[in-house]
Length: 146
Picture 1 (tube, rainbow, N blue to C red):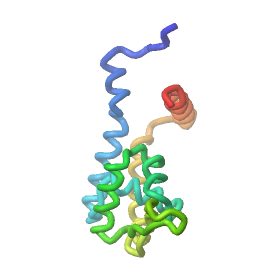
Picture 2 (picture 1 turned 180 degrees about the horizontal axis):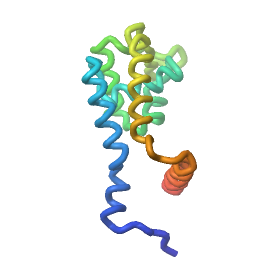
Picture 3 (picture 1 turned 135 degrees about the vertical axis):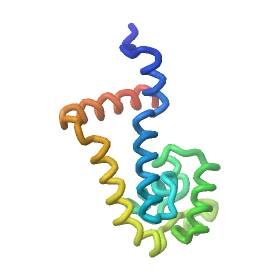
Picture 4 (picture 1 turned 60 degrees about the vertical axis):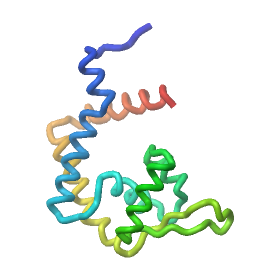
């Protein structure tokens, strides 16, 4: 039984992440205006490291839904910016551990404030109960496909 209640044009916009793209663009603009030399993709890696520092690149791939080559590129660029450092795991030298530098820790408060402002702007006229429904629906969609 089909449960597709979208028009095709709505469905394609939904699938391609119209809302998440708009949020990412707004946040990137705020980072640029604040003089933060950081992309949204780099920030997403830092965000997960702020939650748990010193995790493997593979864990970061899973947390950010990125493939290994993309994560390697992101971590390489974050290293060039002196925001992370990579080291070999004590248990397995093939496993790379990514850790925050003091410079990255200094970015946390300002960038998280900008992210919170952006989300507040995005959700300004959305009732709390609708946000809950949206989270539930998106979780079901994700669970259906994983």
